[in-house]
Length: 245
Ligand code: NDP
Image (cartoon, rainbow, N blue to C red; front, top):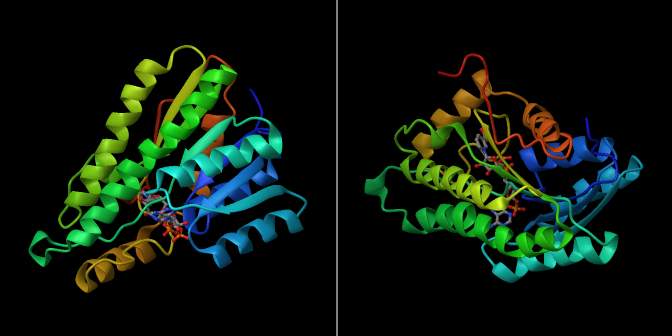
């Protein structure tokens, strides 16, 4: 087994939920973290919590839909630590709705956060990884990429795109880079149903409260992918609650 200790890891969407849990998990294993998200207060709280326990983390305000923000994230890792080992593209939004609601701003937000945001991360990190001759993309998808359930079609489509982009990237990545897609099922976070239509939000939060896994389950799956030895690439991990259909 390789180790997480000392790895320089950038995480988008680290201010809550899966990103926050992953930051805490990796910090405990000795990673050096550069954390990005838009809410400064929440991001600072995560960074402060990690440093108070002796971990290593800094935060940077990042909106993944802005190309330059991803460059600032990767630049920050290099300025502080001289390298970047892993980029975890986790930022996401579950503002789902039936098509008749015509919530086109929410459709745009899912497309720009999950697809453009992922591509912005690839654009910023790939040249760094090529230069270093090593690097690992970890892309957070969803079980929604495998099963379309109304009213999650736009969300599911963008997460399917995450899988497709990741597989293409893997094929082009060559022997030095790794690409992992981690697809969570229902996970207990504040993001479930956030911004969704009231009916969808209520169904999703009810489901979450009945069956969801803790975000630590996803954090440890991501950790498993990262701690593989050189030359071993875990390409896909799907993690569901046992009771999820
Ligand atoms: P949260 O809402 O808790 O986390 C989402 C994170 O993404 C927040 O830190 C948020 O921070 C950040 N974010 C959203 N938009 C942007 C943006 N444009 N730029 C930068 N950061 C952004 O929800 P989860 O932890 O549940 O979600 C994390 C990922 O897991 C998402 O990709 C989601 O689709 C995926 N997922 C979640 C599942 C679940 O059941 N919870 C199931 C399957 C997949 P801020 O607002 O501060 O920017």
